[in-house]
Length: 255
Image (cartoon, rainbow, N blue to C red; front, top):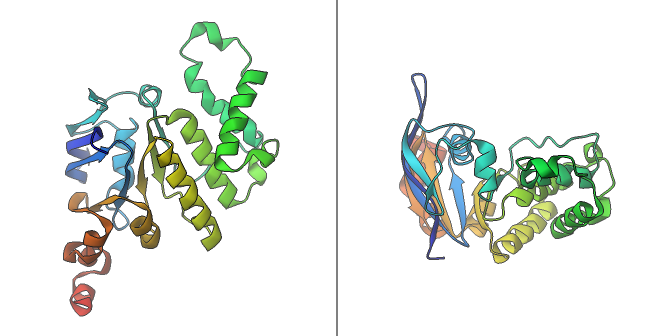
């Protein structure tokens, strides 16, 4: 974990007069699980949207694998090997679980005219999709309609679709939200396995037990600014972080 894979350098984002992010700086090393945490409205998802190309930066730059990517269209960012999930899971409900993964595989097809007319549900494509579903523990549900899945399996399907694109970096936006304890434990195992397979992970998480136990390092945002960065143990004791989550009076009471 020595090589910098992603660097966010002095990045700011404005929406009219609203300053959503203010000169944010952090790096993620290859093979690392980095957590991006903070209270609601801190700017975490805005940061994800900048990295994945949904928004352009107002200032600063984003470097991925030595290449500047801010201002790059989302599909071009995806082609670089960056995949992401979203807070609200919205699969193609009428398609099967397998077909949802095959749609995600289109990133390798649609920019090549020669492949547009070939079948997106060929045997070779289906085998690759099934292999991905096996990786996330959904292969037995491959032919079930995605709209019939419970939330825990929908989260896994979303990760499978993101992994189809995210061969280098996986962005997970609150993938543990709404899950039961057993589902959380199993998903933690999956994400550690993804990292062990060589894919770097950047995640947003509100569950502090998950964030503290899963991440190698944490970056903390509050009102669009970075207020702390470091290993989970140090972040847990940081007075600025305690204040951001609890407020000044409650933080004083804790102290």
